[in-house]
Image (cartoon, rainbow, N blue to C red; front, top):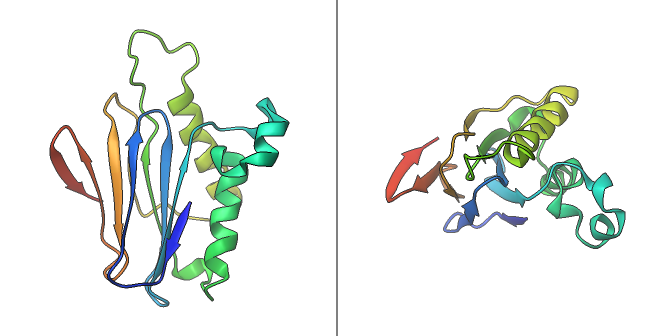
Length: 149
């Protein structure tokens, strides 16, 4: 998880396969953050969750929101973007981590009355996600192409 209120910064997270990237942006305070989490639920490994709560959607997403509120942001001003959650190994959906990662984010957002502004999720492509702090522009790249969200 990273945050910035420097208009010249661009936050980036690479290699979103089954992982999910969440961008949170406040245009009023010109501050943004990004979370890259690997697994949906921290209950699978309490020790690891204690050491690295950002690794899990159910603990990382609340921390993302708590952090942006420290900049003076309010929920009604926030723009939320989500990318990732792919099934890179198409041959099996046994674990389906990508879909489970998407589901935990949607559940948390729904429960807390948070609307997703844009998303590019699922499928079978890897993604690199970007946030330009000065403008709030979000985009991802995959297989040499760029897509604005």
